[in-house]
Image 1 (cartoon, one colour):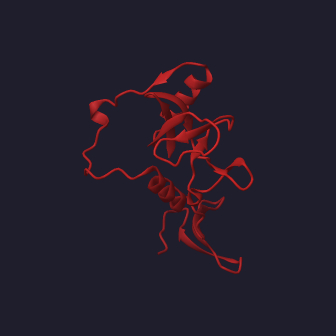
Image 2 (cartoon, rainbow, N blue to C red):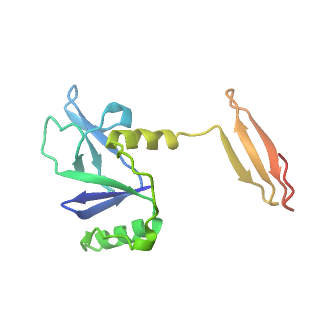
Length: 163
């Protein structure tokens, strides 16, 4: 998943991951935080700029420009946006061609916080994964609570399935 950072309908950055930040009053600084810490803003791709995200709590100190964040899934579009922005070119948002639209169920948009929590949940490390050996066999590997692991062949190099 990728993110467009927009200001006045102009894309000003594109991110692979959201780096959330908030102002911690006890130390008087803006620091990175998790989505559970009620973030107030995000960092730019190069970590050199802090933006307030529209709809999130305001920063109590400092003045930060407000942006909107939109998710998208097209890696080629991400690379194109980054290339143009890195070259100093403006990148205005555009309408997708009609054939790219799919009929979707109409539902209420999740809030930015709901999106972040869903992303955090989806990217949590799993204790199970699949891997392929050098000879082409595929295995399901499970990491146990004690740190040991077990593996089970699920497909041989010849295509035979083991379920």
